[in-house]
Image 1: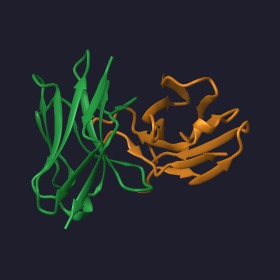
Image 2: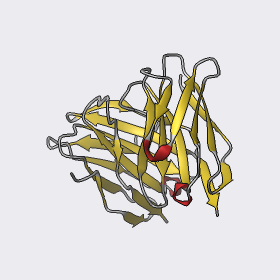
Image 3: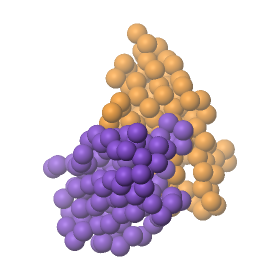
Length: 114
Length: 114
């Protein structure tokens, strides 16, 4: 079956702009999580959505937001971009609390802010 | 609060040698522990996870890890390294078996020489 699909793969934005990243989970998966990966801070949890509701949230400013649609696809938005937002953004999906396979990660969207 | 510490940001081994990647955790509740691998320009792939069923966990590609509560450790091992094992490895802790809201270590880059 198809894996977790993230679009676009690469993105270049200017400081102050906003950006929207998309994630299509594995068919049947209802939980979607987002992570930010940077060389300095490593992998950090952003938020998790299940059935269109945010269930968990990491320690990020309000400029970072997300949503999930009825088909489980998810988007995350970053407003007023800063240079420090340059990172690889990873999405992961799971069939709720899948005790066997857990979360499957996509290949990520690499965002560069100039 | 939960945290993960990976000892050694870079480990180098020869092909055929033992691989040992160290991970120590801190958790106020019984932890669920995970090892992920990341190849360049790709997302994360789950190698194995500890969910309290057995202290010695076998994963994919010949990797295994042993949960030692007394040492708060979950070190990853492989008896014989292969060139294809060269990648970055992340240890992570979560509040549930699926791996929701993972807290990651800083990662260990494994280099394998011929």
